[in-house]
Amino acid sequence: MKRILTAIVALPILLYTVWSENPYFFVALGSAAILLALSEFYNLALKAGCRPFASMGYIAALGVVAFFVIDSLVWIAALMTALTILSLAAALARPEDMSKALASVSATIFGVIYVALLAGFLVGVRILPNTLSEPPTPHLASKLLTMFLAMVMLTDTGAYYTGRSIGRRKLAPRVSPGKTIEGAIGGLITAIITGPLCRLIFFPEIPIAHALALGAAIGVVGQVGDLAESMLKRGSDVKDSGTLLPGHGGMLDRLDSILFCAPLLYYYSRIFIPKL
Image 1 (cartoon, one colour):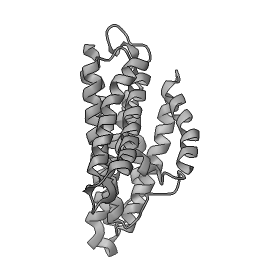
Image 2 (tube, rainbow, N blue to C red; image 1 turned 90 degrees about the vertical axis):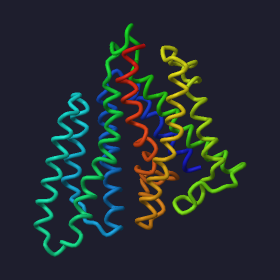
Image 3 (spheres, one colour; image 1 turned 180 degrees about the vertical axis):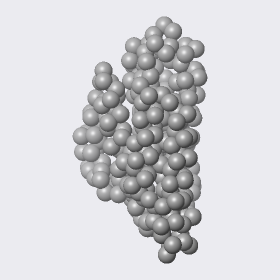
């Protein structure tokens, strides 16, 4: 019940930012989610024995989002270079933690890459102009993001209910004992079906072959992302990354599949949408 109530509250807010004429509502919401998820990641790192330089990570994360907003991805490399140098320099001020310097610096940088950079690709999609396609597609960014979110969420739903009903063989017992091979297949099939459904309901401009291919890719990659975050939690000996979202765990728990799939949507939009 908690999961449903949280979704009832959160989903309309998310969809409003996706479909609003002002894309900066989505940028603001995304920035807040990134900082919360990054905070949870750094807490996982602390539990695993690292001491990440969290303040540097938060500043770098906001910088990553800003560069996606102004469509200057080349500056992200410069930002990550600066973060690397500054993190190593900061580690010099902790001579008593020299044995943990490598892990702490690595956790600082990886957290920004894993959370902020991957999530930032969705910000890059949200600011896409309708004129990217020819002829222009009304609400192009909103349609792409809505289809993407439907694919990710329904993959999770399909995997959950298929696994509960017919799941027998464990998918990755040491990482996530509750997940099954049957559930993973059910999630994949659901994602593939979601693409054509979105095309039928609100996105007629996308070719059906593209919708099927994107759904299949998200159905696979999203489940890998879910398992990857489960691995990080097990390594830190926690069940959930946080308690922010009742029934769902933390923000990172909700973003795990989204993070892995976000680059797929971004590069799809940049490579294939102009050719529609």
